[in-house]
Length: 310
Image 1 (cartoon, one colour):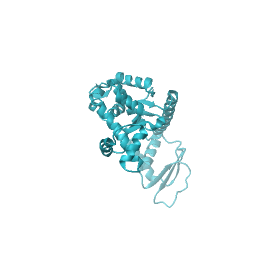
Image 2 (tube, rainbow, N blue to C red):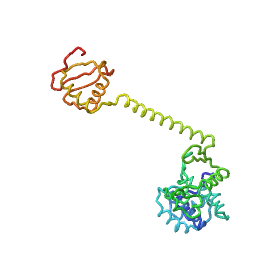
Image 3 (cartoon, helix red, strand yellow):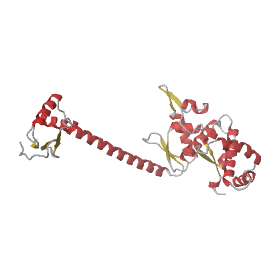
Image 4 (cartoon, helix red, strand yellow):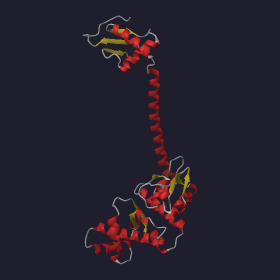
């Protein structure tokens, strides 16, 4: 049997309670895995399919056990629940041997990361996300609700629950050294993990993504900065009094094309403000692209009169 055939797949929620009753949790994992696999066969009575599944996994156990507990678990857990996987040899190592609390914590972190990665070659994980999945929770909840053995990996900072980096780093170190996990978290919020990529390849993918993000942010920042600069350059700064004075002058002017090169700065600012705010709806006003001419037309006129620049 190939290695890919020796993995038990199950909802991550089944690891909840592993610190209180390891054997119950492991039995539930096996029961669910066997029943779910049997259901997927879809041919023959369920007892026969369970028997075929037990042979497939190389496991000896009464079929009735899976029809009872396995069926109940399969029916009660939503099919879209996050799944984890564990190799058969690793499963039975924990099943048959006594394990320390830290070893169980490490197993939970391993399964949590497997459930987050799924089929992705790598992904980003936060400490809170990891701790919640280690408790068998699909969604991120307040860390104060974690089971007691996992609270060691949290601490309260200024009245808020957060992760305890000192203890969490021990788990990550163990996963790196003995569980073939690659971890990279330099200058990142959270950390990136992979079981499939080599460390160099993981770092390459993370930094490549960071480079694209930095360039995208720079382009966005540059566009915002340009917009702000142009607003500073062209935003009218006329006083209300001068605007009203200029409005009155423009109303008295006939249609035409007026030279703007020799007018005062105050005049220019007032005219730009009037155009921008459309303060003279009865007059069509526009500036030439080079701001050298003002084109004025009274809306009731039949056309623009030709005038020599004033």
